[in-house]
Image 1 (tube, one colour):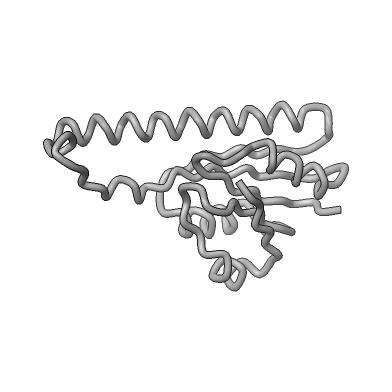
Image 2 (image 1 turned 30 degrees about the vertical axis):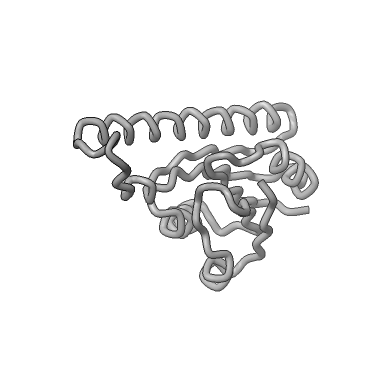
Length: 144
């Protein structure tokens, strides 16, 4: 069984798919770090006329970030419920920024991990090949 798992989630990730996968992989005393990434890349959009003034744009960005954050909290709560009573150490994180940099920093701070699980598609842009070379551990790409 796998002892140290880094699970990466993004906006619109199907939590149930990830719980099912981690449930199959985890050992009796596994440690699971759930990293919810809010990709800051969406802040570079300029928009159409409806978002053309600074106040409207800033309000929109705050609205989007709040929605992404609430969704990340719900995902972490779902994993916390799943982990209760299983003897699993859960480390739920929510980070905002550039996904590749966040994954590398999290791996350095909390790793090493036996395996990293990435979402496919979704709203975070991660390059699995680049991560695999830098992290030096197996990566599973799980459908969202």
